[in-house]
Length: 116
Picture 1 (cartoon, rainbow, N blue to C red):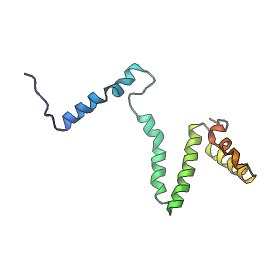
Picture 2 (picture 1 turned 30 degrees about the vertical axis):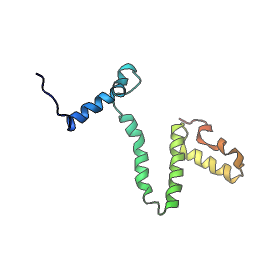
Picture 3 (picture 1 turned 135 degrees about the vertical axis):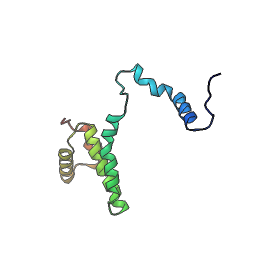
Picture 4 (picture 1 turned 90 degrees about the vertical axis):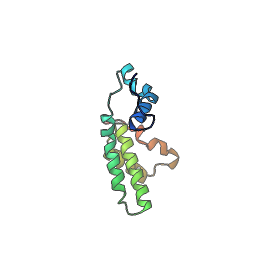
């Protein structure tokens, strides 16, 4: 008679998790583009986590909201291959020069030419 695992406990929870998540846990076997680990993703979000911790010292709720908006623009630039410093300098110049608010969508990072 085989040994049994008690229905309650850490091992039983781990087995239930693996069985319930089997498709996601084995998807990398069917698609070679999927990495076995999440190290690349974790490395890419580390700056966001650090920025979130730094935002705790923004001084006020409004300061935190402004920090979040700028951090979002910077990360969106990176995702679209746009240099954030060049983008922000160009964006501020266009805003000061009177770019119409009705065309704000054209000022988003995904409309800028990629620099990387």
